[in-house]
Length: 121
Image 1 (spheres, rainbow, N blue to C red):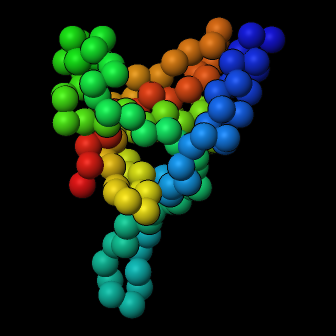
Image 2 (image 1 turned 90 degrees about the vertical axis):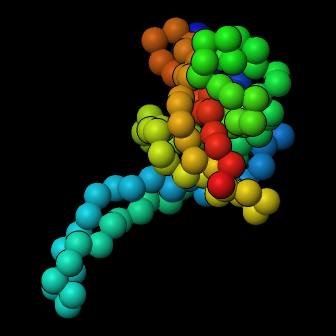
């Protein structure tokens, strides 16, 4: 019960206040018979996220998970069918971010919110 409530709360808040972006992750390689080489496959997912500066997260700076120039990108776990990984990319109209760490927020036994540490490209 708590798990589902936490997930739904995070999802509703980010749907209301978040910015639309495209989450991109490498999903493997595929052989191209025309070139004889391998082509990188990228999966894309539309997400709504809240982007914040590092200054609001002194606890993450103290743990050395975050530098002052980084950004924290919040995405509801319900929005993604997978756990975000380092080096995934999130593109927004104003900027793209490379993920360097996922400090997930748990609601009971499940992740409710992905608190992603991103570096602007």
